[in-house]
Image 1 (spheres, rainbow, N blue to C red):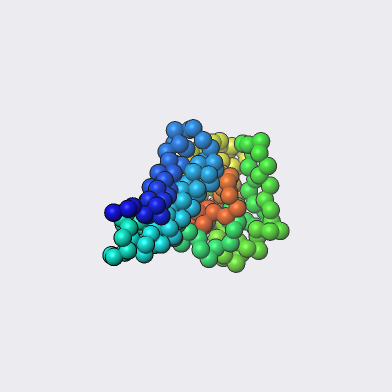
Image 2: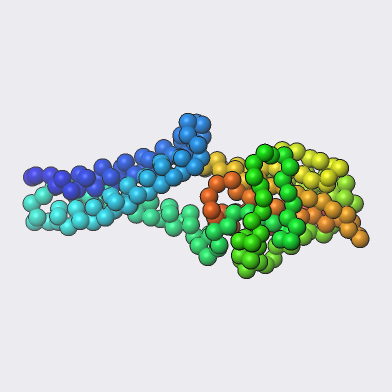
Length: 235
C-alpha cells in the first residue's frame, strides 16, 4: 500500500514540534541561548510546528481512512497527538493570565513606587500606562503595615524573601531597602524585586515592587509574588 506523503508530513511536523518545545528550555538551562531566544524561537516555533502537524494530521486521517488505499495512518496520529498536546500546553500556560492586562511592573505604592538602586538598567516606572491598569486588575495590592520597628522590619523582609526562594542582591539598612530577584524554573526568566521599609506611627510600612525583565505581560506572576510576600511576613 502506498504511504500518504501528507501523513508522513504530519508526523514529521508533530515530532519536530515536540522536539523543539523540549529543546528550547534545555538550551536555556545549558546557557547555550538566552531565555527570550529559547522561548520565542525554539519553544514558540515548536508550538507552531506541532499545531501545523495537527492541521495536516487531520487531513491525513481523512486521506488514510479505510478504503482510501493510502497508508501512513500512524504518522497522521503522531501529528494529531503532538498538536493536541501543544494546544493543551499553550492553554495551561496562558490560562492563569487570560483576563489580566499586559503589564509587567507591579507595586504596592502606585504614587511613589520603590526604586531599584543595585542595577544600571533603566528601571523607571511607567506610571501613566501601568498604574490605571494595575488599579483595575489588582485592587487588593497595598502597602504592608507591620508592628515591628523599621530595622527589625527590614530583617524580617530579608528572612521572608529568602524563605520564598528569592535571591538577595543587596540590603541597604540606611535606605531601608532590599533588592532581590527570582528566576523562573523552566525558561529562567528573571524578575527583579525591591522592598522598601519606612517608619510609621506604629511600627513600619513596607512597599514591594516586582518587575519582569522580559515580555510585555507577566500572566499575574508579579502580583502573586507580592501577595505571597505579604502573606508570609510577620505583622
